[in-house]
Length: 258
Image: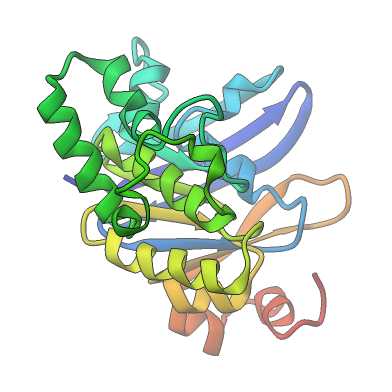
């Protein structure tokens, strides 16, 4: 079941450097929320705090709360590995496991998390490749390396791998930035389908993409070079793009900076 995210007073550091400062927002279940803003404003850092990937970076630490429904993901005794199963992630560049087959890429997380009969794995792999709109393209070469697919196919394979372990939230960090326009449209169509099952948060530099795929949009910015990133405005995508309430949001969307 897709879950709601509530963030309160979140600040993230790299060592002594404050990367983002005092961010609060909520993300509705079964929706797409897009993060936009200029490079270096903390969008990806904030995204990585939502599944505790930020603390994997040397010196990375977080203050504040991230609630998934009512569970504090940074609460005492919470297992970060369990968090990352619940809150899956798709990265900027397609990263299928290069030595694994297409089949084994999708099944990898399942094998780590439990024991499955071959018939069960077969069904789950097919279901998630179909869910990623990839099954018809790869069903005759499931045991060939995933690295032999095109870039767009590899990214859809990574999405199938992420969804196979049945997360409740799916984070996507610029999932189309390395792809051609046709593959980008395929991923955007897929995002629209996946939101009926998952809560989705996407970082994108492409404002047209944010306008096409998201229900809500959050604009991040820096007060000045060297200052931490801040959440400037968040709201329904239609309103953010047509009638933002903050001048900086309007300036960014209209191309006056960024």
